[in-house]
Length: 386
Image (cartoon, rainbow, N blue to C red; front, side):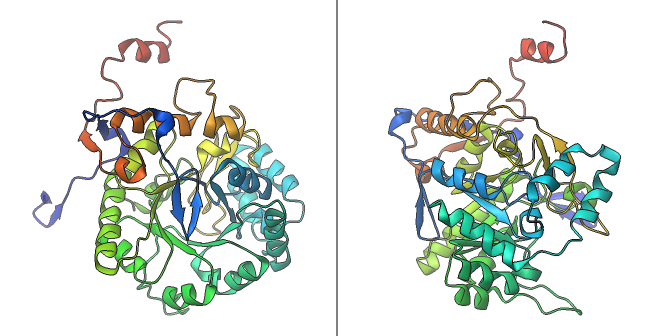
């Protein structure tokens, strides 16, 4: 339904996770009997959870651990692991620097060129452990890095930028031909990011194995503030899910959509899937793991931009192991741990036996749901009660 923003502009209402809630049906299911597996690129994953391609989130070691736990992590081929042999020492510098010195340090560190031999080495480290090797590149570097990653044994290649389209215009460089790229890669290619029906539909037509949904909702991303670009996640996911379903109906090809960013608690993951996502990609929750390379910090991929940095370094702390964050047991009551337990319990409460049924549950507009009846919790947060 169109809303008039002013005489010259019509708009529409969009919704974020905090403005919706999930309504139970007449059926409930034992949480242990729910199936949360998902197929991406022809491969079955026991968990619909992907760790974001961010330097404070995924190292070769955490990629291996994510795979062992049932999901997978994406290694950033524009990040420190592809630029420095001793990436851990670089990450230690990023974690230790003062706030006002952080962006200049990042811009300096990321001037070091990425090295193909390190790309090959990191992928082989992941593969040697028997894990899924997923790697990420920006579109401008995909033609060069894609074949290198494929030949090194990568299982999944992600082409990712703040906004990705099939109709890029440039006077200085030729756009990436996604259809040709996907055909030549011979391994599943995931692409993103997008937030609309039309873009998702055109991306699916290029032969991709999955589409990432979300522009600017991440905890460390400042694109919405710097560029003013983005759509709240609940609406963005629902729109792109409609594109997925339409594409399947027309072509009998199912292209999963992956909600990327804006999820900090188990309930957010439940809502993302209920809005239509097949899987989720998360960064800051994984950055809180003891095994995360960011040492309690998390930062956006666009932070090192030499001209327009778009990503804060945020202190997320360390709350437990990666296994505890994903599988529990939880040590806190804020939804920051045991995401799988939260998802299974939510599905059981809603009567959803699998993720496809979870996508069909009733979603209600509920902007007050987080505060409804929570007067004592709010007071405690404000320090009124100890």
